Length: 269
Image (cartoon, rainbow, N blue to C red; front, side, top):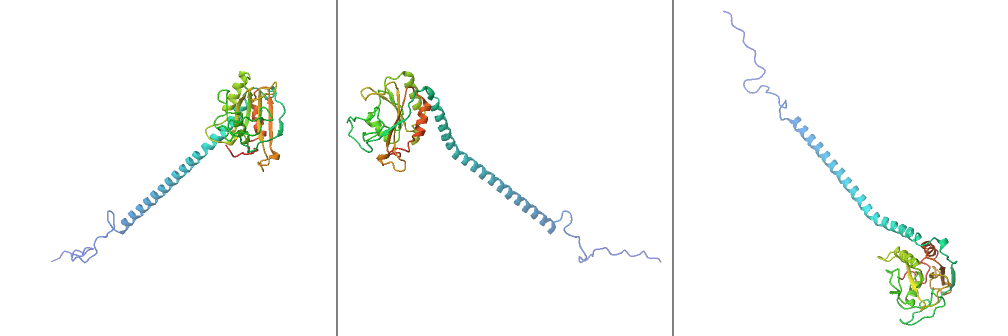
C-alpha cells in the first residue's frame, strides 16, 4: 500500500521557538521610525529658532532706524529754520544797493560793566548809542521789535548791546514802509528758546532821546570786543552803519561781520 508523502515543516515552529515575524516593517514602531520623527522635530525646531532670530534682528533694525530718524528730525528742523530765517531776512525791504547805507564806522567804546540806577539819564557820545553806561538789567531776549508805545529806556537797550545784540535804531517818525520792513525783519528771529545768534532788536529813537543822523532812518549798532579777551576795554569799539532805507540784506551782512560772540559779554542773555 502506497503512503502519501509527509508535508514539509513550515518556516516557523509550532512550539513558539521558531523565527517570528520581523519588526520594523511598514506600519511598525521600531527604532527606524522613532529616529525619523526625532530628526524631523529637531529640524522644525531649528527652523523655528532661525525664523525667530530673523524676526528679532528685523525688529531691532526697524527700531534703530526709527530712533535715528527721531533724533535727526529736530536737527533737520533747526537747520531748515535757520536757512529759512536767513533767506527770509535777506528778502525784506530794499536791496542793499538801494538802502543808502554808509560804510561802517567805528569809535572807542565806553561803559563796560558800568551800571547806573534805574531812571538815571545817561548822555551818550553817539546818538543813537553803540556803547556806554547802562541800567543793571537788559531787555528780554524774547522780544525783537519795539514801537514808541512799548520801547524800554535807551539805557536798558544799551545793556543789550553789551551782551552782543545788534540794535536797529529807527527814526520814530520813519516812513511806514520802513517801520513795516523792520517789523518783518524782527519776526525772522526766534523767541521761543534762547539762541545767541538771534540777538536782534529793532527800536525807535525819538527826538527826546537825542539827534538822529540827518537824512537817515536806520542806524545798525553793535558793541564789539576781542573774542579772546572780551574784558579788555582798550579793544572794545562801538560800530554803526547809517542807512536811508531798511534792507534785510544789509542787516544780515552787518550781523555776519559783527557776530554776537565779539562782544563784552557774549554769553549773557
